[in-house]
Image (tube, rainbow, N blue to C red):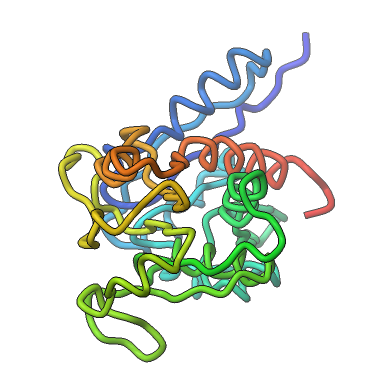
Length: 254
């Protein structure tokens, strides 16, 4: 009989009550007949607790969520160039030698965002608004730039290079085809929240994309649907970035 060591994967962040990742990977392992892997949530109140967490030799890979996508980077021994360019990490691949633990950071959000937007983006598409300025916003901006889409970032407080919500007048909203919510507004359990924009200015030419995936149709997207907008849930992005995470953890090319 051949005994295989159980490989562990998981999600770090805080809090983690909203996460679908554990269920997604548990279902994947069952569906694809992968008996030697388990996926758990690791709610870290301080990102520095990562050092103790990775002392478990069975831990082979982690996903990273709010609020640690940027804060985790100084703790890593290597960062993929694309993740470094974005300035945010949401996948950690763990390598081990006799006396060293290697932690390399990647950004699979880039893949998930691209996979979601590609079917609705065409040449000469126009411009976009990115609501929020955190780690997920950085990944969205990276993808938009790669697609040659002009964008503006919107923040609650005045920041260099950003608009505030109070500056989103009629001309900006009506002349922006894509609006992406990268904030946690509307995420379970506070599902009634939504970004502070004038939804009466939206119409059938607009596309609303919400990175929040729980619930699948957020208040932000519902308001867009009421105005005839095309809406994109964060669930497709979740599935795409999760599969890329699995590829990173298991491929020798990363």
